[in-house]
Length: 262
Image (cartoon, rainbow, N blue to C red; front, side, top):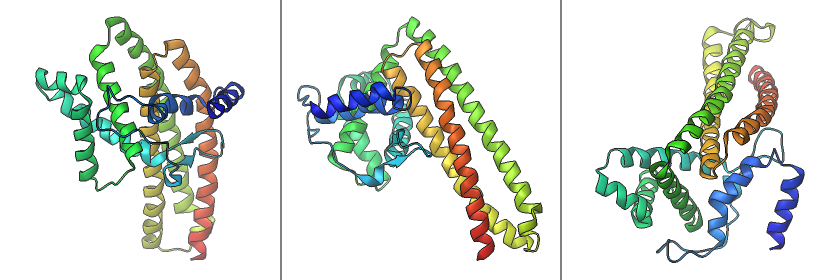
């Protein structure tokens, strides 16, 4: 109780920056601390584990924390199970919606195919999150579909800005790399190899950010956020992306200096 009370005090002070963390905890972490034997047979109820390798700080903000590896796996898992769901007959869909065992089985198969070994708690969280999303999609009313459509436009506007900024940054970095004074004496082959090294790193970052952003949207939909809430959310978190760009320019300059030294 003391932990939850402290969390909500912090949430009150940093309402915007903690918004996604709040959604993630409500949707994923709280179930790990509760007992639901009637709905989650064979899914162990264990204390929330501390896995430092699952957590990263978003940009330079100590307040906006997301579990990076967990986001990657959850996004890929959700995409995988939704593909199965949409390509199943009605009887199989009903089984996936009503029974947690079938989802748990799919989660285990997915993790085995990826050769991933997660804690029992993490598996439980992924299973519940995915199951919640299937039920939400299946049970959406026409009114809820309309709200989600409007909210999705805000999400796409946000992501369009990120892609535009990303392409603009890459273009400027490439121009600096090819014609900048620091690298003018380097061979074309060397420039190509080093540029691909940087570009791959930056592109992987963008892919991961896209997954995080999509799960962010899913969490808001699962929590029943209305259009006003979602619009306000994206208006505020765009500042986090602006901080990310500043951080990426710093990393680029560091990469450039280190590459020239080597």
